[in-house]
Image (cartoon, rainbow, N blue to C red):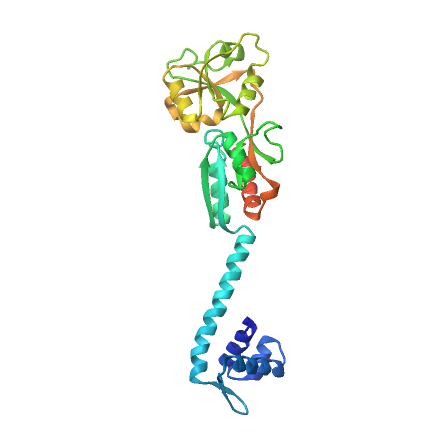
Length: 298
């Protein structure tokens, strides 16, 4: 028994006329009659009582009609569900993200994505850079929204820039620089620095190098932290200052001050990382949403 047998049967039952059913299905009348006959042969009982001009369901045929309609409806639902997943309109997408650097982009990207694909479930994972890259490589994450890793760490993966973020000096409200309009890089280099742990954020070390590369004095790194939350707490408690992207203001609020650095360092490149090997329509759709969100922040 095939789905076409059920469709032919349902059409004949609804029209009560083989000729009209054949016309509706764009098949010849003899072909439709033969398919229904084959179905009855397979079932072992009659579905119709036939007359010269029409057909009428037997009692068994009436019961079979309800079940046949349910089967066809379920088959159509299965096709729609599979097509939605295949086109990225439905399913589940796991996204890794760095909370502070992506604070201005991620919420907009999510709103844009969910508005266009409301049946797509997004699961966010707050992870370190190393964890995100590993997750994307292993297929546990569809993509990651993060600061651009260096070429070595990015090997085998794709990166699409969606926004840039200015680097600033994060200080406590009572710090001597808190009321300043800007702080020179030379001045900042003499302050005790709170930084992200090298093991979890290997790209952050390169950020510090790009900011303080021309400074001859050795930096005074007093603490390393494995999360933005603990780094913020350390700065707030007066342990030291930190070089962070301007988007940290979304996390710190009025608790801390973000002071522009002079001259302005090269901004951070924020973007989406994914693997071509695991690329699917849902990932492609979110990349486009992130690009749209990034352009809105400029």
